[in-house]
Length: 306
Image (cartoon, rainbow, N blue to C red):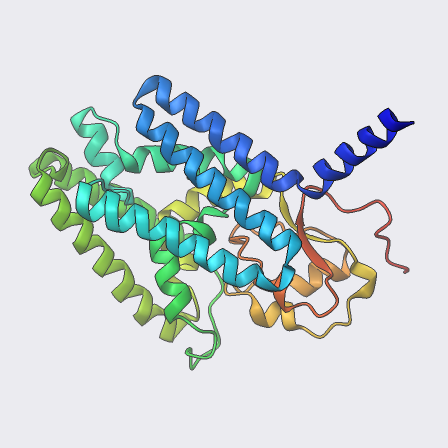
């Protein structure tokens, strides 16, 4: 009897904290792999990120009202470290053009690692969650953009614009890699880091006035364009766990910075499968009936009467 009770308690613990446990396991495994091929410092970095994210998810599980505060603190902490310390101080460039600078030079650095880990591996598990938990430009736009700043009807994502911009960035990067590659010069690389950041936030602020909140992220970000190909197949998504209790208040749609029609998904008892969902959980926090949650599947008992 005691054995069965202990087993049930362990199963309950795993079900309750499944997401943070899986998160920590994934980041630890990634850290081990990168350590084998590159450096132990990457192992420490990924384990620390995994511990931070898992700890935040445990806090949210216990205190749901702290969801957005906890997520923003996590985002500012990770993003601040990646940009302030690794980028500006150490000189590691994580932006998209650096991938081609490094490839041309024959080296592996932060940009390529970010592409492989945050935009190809993690999206199979958590979609575009990197955007709402670690991206420094995302953190800036979350603090400065609002859905009320746009005086026009916000523009939905255009694949033509997104892929056109990505192709332009590739050609532009290869051109500079051939003539003056910043990957081989630390001071030039720091100049690129600052210049790229200023370009992104300036264009993002201007586009937000024309196309709505998080316009750069929704319309242009090349990293989101790539991870968005994989995110529909992710295991964990925003999921209606109590769809029958939806009151059609539309607060989830009003809260979404990526202009996703969350309420229609809830009405159809479908998980949020949009390629631009960044798992910021604003829709989760805004719902007065706790209809939504990050989960790996729709509960069996979640049936809507037709």
